[in-house]
Amino acid sequence: MCLGRNTKKKNNNNESFNHCVWNLASNHTFVGKNVLEIATYTASCIFNEGFIPVLKAIEGTRHYADTVDNARILRAEKTVEANCKEIRTLRRALKTVENDNFVETDELLYATGIAD
Image 1: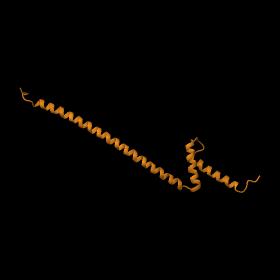
Image 2: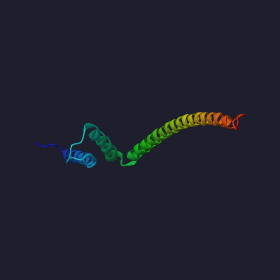
Image 3: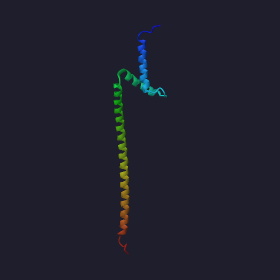
Image 4: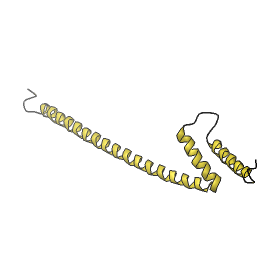
């Protein structure tokens, strides 16, 4: 049976693509479906167009990571700001209570007829 001239070439291309996939996802240990799917997509990019699409994907993930980090920092700053405001309010109230107690004590020390 003659399969034709291109059979070996297709087989070599398939082997080459599979080699790209299994270089990214280990075939010695278990990898989940998601890892294998990502490895397959990445391998197809590398196999068809080289590493340029991978670099573009990395740029996109960098942009996403920066956006998430900035949002996290803003949330943290707002939380700290709210906590600081509460602490300042509590300190102010505590100081007011201390001053009121001090004024009452001070009035007792300087009242008329204490020396008698």
